[in-house]
Length: 97
View 1: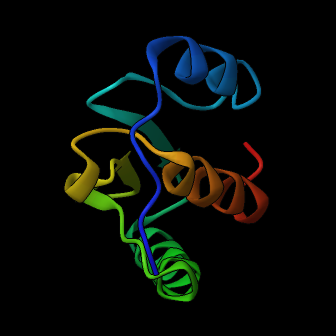
View 2: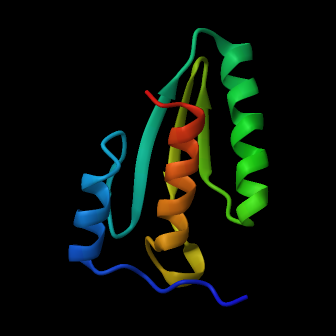
């Protein structure tokens, strides 16, 4: 299955307007999810892992106590693609804010 191509700056700006919990640039989009405690953050990471596996697209994750710092980028495309936006939407579905 071919991977999507990198979004233009205008496409990315438009897409981020529909993803208010995310910020970033052509190098990656980012969001922090804060949970009540460390076990909750680990459980959240597992939930994200199942969604990521469904898409065969995996976030860069930094787990710090009760916070997950997520970065989405399609490394093979050298930047943000529609695949990253879809994963962001699915993560937002799990953790609406």
